[in-house]
Structure formats: C-alpha cells, structure tokens
Image 1 (cartoon, rainbow, N blue to C red):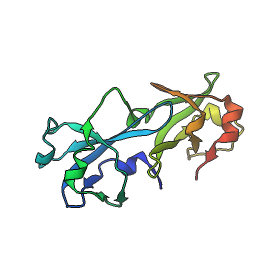
Image 2 (image 1 turned 180 degrees about the vertical axis):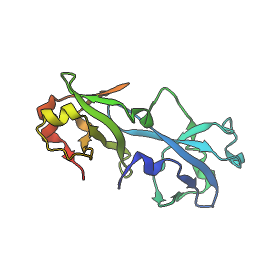
Image 3 (image 1 turned 135 degrees about the vertical axis):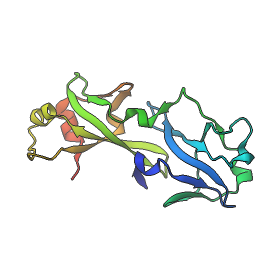
Image 4 (image 1 turned 135 degrees about the horizontal axis):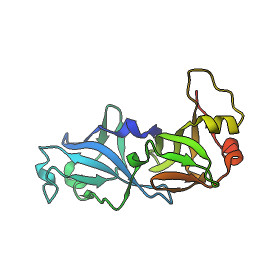
Length: 184
C-alpha cells in the first residue's frame, strides 16, 4: 500500500497485547536508495517498558507485520517489539524536512515545491514525491493551467539525484515532463 507521509504522522502505534508504544512523528530514510530506515516515534508517558534510556524522547522502529487504519496495530507483543526499537538517529535523513523544498532539474530550472512524499509500506521505500509545479515550469512544459488551481504532479524517486535543502532531479525539464504523472 502506498500512502502519503501525512497519513503516517500522528498515528498511534499499538502492540498486539494493547500496549501503546507512541505516535509516529516522522519517517527516517536513505536519500540515495530511498529505503525507509525507521519510523520516528514519540514515546507515550506510559512507556515504562521502553524506559531503557528512551523516556519521553523519540526512537526508531520499522514494523514488518501490521495493520494500518486509525492506528497502526502491530502483530507482536511489547516484549518482542522492544528488542527492535533503537534510539532515534539525527544523522539519518528525515522525510518531513523535504516538505516545501524547491525541486530543480539537472540544469537548475525550477520545477516546483514538494507537497508530500509517497511511502510504499509493504517495501518500506519512498516511491515518489508530489510536487506543486511552479508557474515557469508550467509554461516551459507547455501545460494548460486553470485560473485558480495549482498543478500537482507525481515524480518517481528513481529520477531524484539528491535531496538536501533542495531536491535535485537527474533530468532536464523535457525529461521531467515525460516521466511525471499529473494529478487531479
């Protein structure tokens, strides 16, 4: 299942034995391979079973078997889950830091601004980003724009060259136009 980043944020994670682990606050990922390295979780006050240095701080966990609805229900009890939890690592990129970043082509032409990122929760990969096109990009791509609406497009992660304070694509504007999907 592929979902936007916002659909994971603030979701409560609960173990099979009804233990409330905490809320998902972000997604940590590898900006080169686009693999999700872990979900950043803010521990609940009642997280006494996870108190091995965690307290109210954030930690990372990547669930393998779960059901996602209004909460993320894990298939394992807390005794098994706590062995897979590690302290959060600020050296691993945070997906929410990409939101509102400028997106540019290989030749530094402005494409637009990142609206969200799409996450494949079966493979735990960032599959694509949703970008609101800039007016100059719309004109360069010879696209029609209605008077009041913005154009959002999906750009696959495999054409992203790098992601720092800006997202750099490994294509020029024509290549981006060919490989993007326009969203309604």
